[in-house]
Length: 600
Image (cartoon, rainbow, N blue to C red; front, side, top):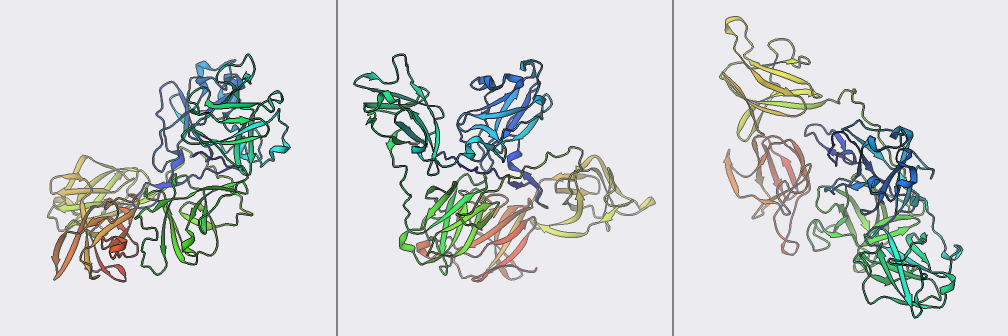
């Protein structure tokens, strides 16, 4: 269902984590979503949150004839394919040879949305862009607001109409509404009218909802007619057509399936019990799901549906701001609950605890945080538009590791690098700072603070003269923007894929079965969907029979939830989230009170 935020829902540019050692922020809204093309300029346009998936957006400027470009398919933006957790962009390829009158993008341009009007700045003033990419390159362009964002609620009686009006609340994907109406006297739109009929007269915000309206003409007052609404001819609302008498204004909802249903624009939303209202300021949450449990229940599923819970109940406009709301149900009044909103099991969630269900609650979802707000005074803030990165600006450094499986037989082992700089000092370099065990193998660890530098590696025994031994290969070159795993023998060095490691679980819970579920950098499926992977493999170590969960040591941050794999009605038990870095073998003891690392 498409909704429009009248005061401007905001596009929040949210980072995703790309480094397993230090969280390097990449703005998901800036990720490329179109391929560049040789000889063409690509504009990727990041639009306001309220932009509909089928909105028609045109680029307009002196270079293409100004407003004459509106309606010309050559200047119509295309919407990128939606990817989970990534706000979809609109894009357009431009060929400078088609520009007119010697004009370029540097003469100024803006974007026009057929459904929501031209773009505006924070002061509701016209705005222009002047930047342009190189041929064969791309450029991110930000649209902060559409004109419709600044519409204020109106009383239909205060607007002068030509006769009675038909108001359409458009909750379909149709973008170009037309009215066809006829009665005993035939077509009421005029003898010269042809299908699809009358284009919409305008739009109006009534009680926080955006209506498209058609003035039916003073000459038609009192006539009885049948009406069809179409998307500029096709598709159209089906038979039987609503039959109305033009002795008043009429209000209809155009539903998602393209049918007309008469509605009362002044009807209030009825809730089942108390509700939580969330202003969604995080486009990574394309879908909102609620997971609720009552305090003191040991995490028992309040809804009886299993993770990720259930979709939110609906949307409601309050003081010009669109909220998603979830009704708790009147039968739960007086209970104290904990609440998680998640993006339908796609790895993002935010939590608020201790809600006593004796009132409604209002929150803003920003990043992964729920912040309490007052709906009477709350106004969404303007989005912070980041500056374009300077290509000459040095990349931020991050910590990476070189893991070495040493099979040389040398008594001493050193690593020397050469290239952009000497990371481990003068010859012979440095010894490993530590060792880790991964998948039963012991690796030497050489940490580096890197920012994409290219280095050549020489492994050696730290000796000089006749005692010196070194392994130097021309292809042993690395770029310090990731971890590396390398096996070194006395004669050669070989890159390895990330090895398999193990989580060894000392089960002191008394559960018959232990399941492991994980959520975090890898989403909510590192160990499978809830309840996760059942521990079936065991290993006896120092007299302790451990349950073994193997994993690929890729350095991701994950929150582990140990549970007994049972349903809510069958004695379900689970422990609190336990945060780990999935890089090495680890030993964890679990009891009824939680999980903790175990020394080995």
